[in-house]
Image (cartoon, rainbow, N blue to C red):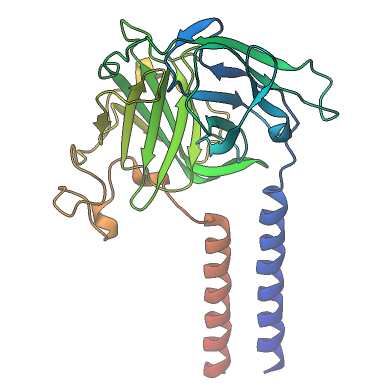
Length: 319
């Protein structure tokens, strides 16, 4: 009994230590950063219902410094709404700046004062509102290529862990939209990333997610935020399952040909009539050699300890 108790305490100690280590690894203290981009474009002439947005790639300490000013420098009443961005890290995102009343004709400045948090000069984006402007039809459908990588363990950094990485290559539209919206759809959730047209659309990636992405949807928006035709793809064009490699591995996609197995090709991930979509493990899509949503290291250690306990118990009973 004493030996068994000692082993049990040791097992709990190991699991507890690993849990603490994982928790510490996920601690994140990203740097304070300025705004990287904004909507609408500088000097744009837009309709009253224009969508105003600020993009950033680190920690945002400037929310209280966001303001919309009219031509006389007076503040226009707005609501600042945070939008989390699907990305490698658990930070970075955007703010939608929503006027409480429709904007009237005139010149406006979208301003961010960083205060004492940053030594950067205030960010300003200037645009004009013309009520006579008609709203054109939303942008057309976006063509894109979807590349997926899966890892056999959670990888990433102290600011984000996951077991899938996705790279998208978007084909530019003839008429540049105000933004692109990417939706990564899992079985029970959806992660959103809004892309500014200034981003490198030919190789957008670095999106890491813990959990299987079943489908990817991309849609372009106009200056008011109205969406065009959505394009949803539920089969990656190319995929790779990494065995033991870390996140730093770079894939030469020109050497990869498709995916090894056939996958469901249409339908919402929550639809029961999608072929290959189910709840059992045998229904998992291709390249699933590295698709764990938990912490594989902890699971394996726990299983190993249970096996050791059973083995010791069996030997004790035989003796």
